[in-house]
Image 1 (cartoon, rainbow, N blue to C red):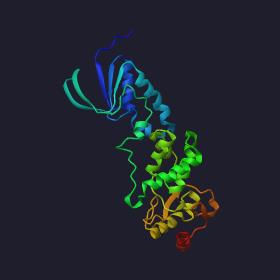
Image 2: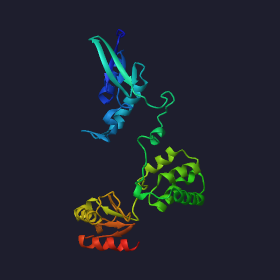
Image 3: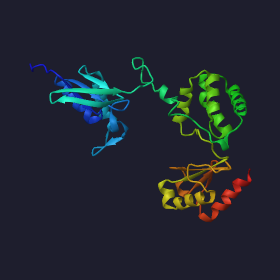
Image 4: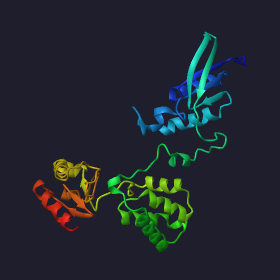
Length: 289
């Protein structure tokens, strides 16, 4: 049997290299202090989809190591921490580590992420002043929609869809009203909205213009069509005109490749789009208001 190791080791950085080094040292009998300045271990590899050159799933590789490192009796993980001072000499170091405040009780934390969704620093939804409406009007309309579907948790998606249609986006006032009436934590309502791309937290125009940028449409001139729309509307893709009449978006596919380039306005398809037809297209929908 190998002799039991004595002393301890500090590993700085809890990426895949730091985790593997910690596991190797811990398995050899050393006490390991794994220091990471971020709130969790894993590093950049947890943000990747696949790894080069085998295209293996990155999380399939790193996840078992994350679990093993967190459970290993010889590894003490110090996340959200920074090394401030190192004194001593080889074989006998003293290290001063500063642990940053988390504003949560680490012993009670389950990693659910709800606190992140409602963090007052990172997740403030601000509505531009030029788009402000009377809060009472929002609440009245939201209450009407809630009464239509019922104040029950199972109606959340339908209520969000109807509210989105009414305002053309989801105002924070409406989300908080829905949270209150349905007795669902605001973090859960906000999380649902941010998960589905069909919902927008920013004000949108009365008419939504979508330009297909799929391969078939791209080779047939989708980019010049998009450039012309941006020029005429004086906005870029993803923005709304100042009069809140049009919102310009790009999509990967509209499902009618044979008609490319395609522009959809409020769900109405306009195929084989040319630059000369764009002014008339904009004027047609502008006159509807």
